[in-house]
Length: 212
Image (cartoon, rainbow, N blue to C red; front, top):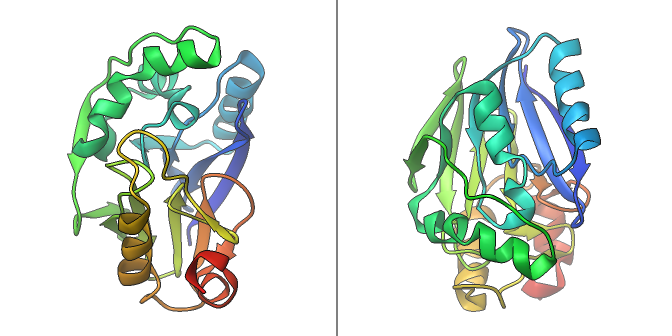
């Protein structure tokens, strides 16, 4: 049985997730920790639960989702999984930091590119990857059908969708991707977003104002 632990980090109140099972194997998703206190929160949870981080996953590479990426890679020495279309976004990290008024070094990590339709496994639990661009060019969603939940990053929120006024954003593309790839899934599917509270596919189909 998979468990999800969320942390709210950095200036953007970004959701970082640790996904783990009874074997103590785990994935770290969107490490957004940007200071010592936030990093300590992750380290303490991993240590207290005896977890082994096997993969680092990115839903996308906007600055608020990768502020702890270099620390995570240096600490756990496992590949970073992301879509190739967001490599440009990750490469702009220094410039993004300057716009927010702080210094961020370029990320040096082993990157494994993932694509639409790929499947990642955590001890037999399968996660299908959906490429849903529009918020960023390489935004992906990790969907587990067995337990009916997804990690959606900034694609879909409770009552909202990701911003499309950023680099290579595309409103029509995002709406189409959500409609054709996510809204066809079971209504009970839980959605763990990159910001805010969890929601469900059924709730968003019925109440999300962007789909009226």
